[in-house]
Amino acid sequence: DLQISVPFHPRRVHSVNSASGNVISGNPASGSGPRRILLVTTELRPGGAEKCLVNLACGLNREHFEPLVASIASAPGEKEARLVRKLADHAIPVSFFDCDSKFRFPAAVGKLRALLAKESVDLVQSFLIHANVIAGRALARFPAVEFYSGIRVADPSWFRHRLERWATAGTRKIICVSRSVRQFASERMGLPEHKLVDIPNGVEPWKIGPVPDDSVPREWLQSERSPCARS
Image 1 (cartoon, helix red, strand yellow):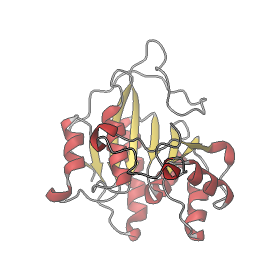
Image 2 (cartoon, rainbow, N blue to C red):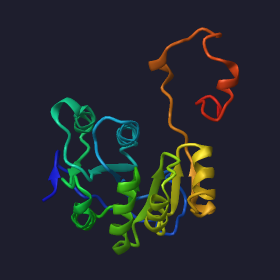
Image 3 (tube, helix red, strand yellow):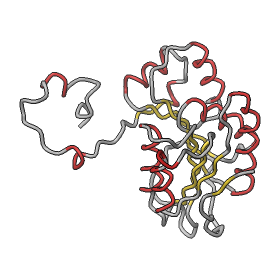
Image 4 (cartoon, rainbow, N blue to C red):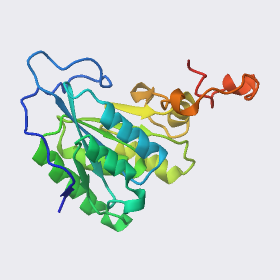
């Protein structure tokens, strides 16, 4: 069964904009309640993608969006549970499917379908390939739910390319973390260009602190790898 770490808020009336092909933006329609956003990840142990997911969930404006999180894998141990605790501190419901093996793929799809049916989700965004594939399969039965997937690395595996093409057939948009990953997804993975968008990872400068002007080569700051390249 699904494990819910904190209770869901009562269901509120809302509208589903199933005709829109845009990434989340703006306010919901006048007179509607918050849109339910389900963020799906492979796991919730601390990592770059997982941290981005948690920051997104915690940063959403609760007047307009009601976030939920689902993890394909089991809950992390106490020493690796800081992201889970952060979600709990923000009263964001988390479901753990306990599917820690590739042989549990059908079970993960079934559990995600059950969650979608129970909670009347408006929009799903998946992170990482396992979550993309499982969400793509589960959402085939929910055409009214908007689906956005994410690609975070330029993975050279041809088998994973085929999986991503299959899994993202029903997506509105495929979100890449950089222009280079977007280019790779189009040219090497064969994903449709019109679906690809790049939203670079955020940088929290207050956590980095000032550095001397000569400590980082200027040519690196202007490169594609640099977070300053798009500023």
